Amino acid sequence: MTLVLRRAGYDVAEAATGLAAIDQTRATRPDLIIMDLGLPGITGDEATARLKADPSTKDIPVIVNTAFDKKSSLVKRAMGVGAAEILHKPTSLKTLQEVVRRYLSSVYTLTPTSSNPALFDSPIK
Image 1: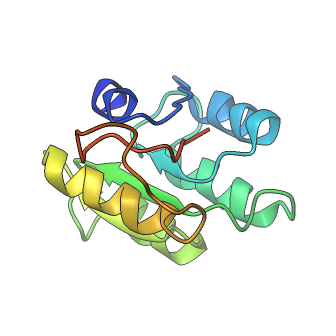
Image 2: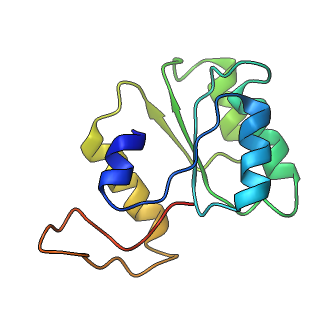
């Protein structure tokens, strides 16, 4: 996912754990978060809950990308605490790009950076 988004012209920051995701979000203030639920330490639903409870990060959309079933308590909790959308793995690259564009189109005007329409100036921080 990171490679695809970077090749599409987005700036991407990564975090390997739930706590690192919270720290990274507070430090970089991204325009969009793509959160896995099966993270070490604290799970993605808990990280999402903490981000949504923090006034400085609560308005950042969180898209959950997970292999957990729709009926999983983790998925239900993530939606309950404010995740904007759930993508279920395996997520197609086309779907990923469409979702990212949809959430970032309200932040940026997407304009091609070259003759390749898949490349945009709009970064994910």
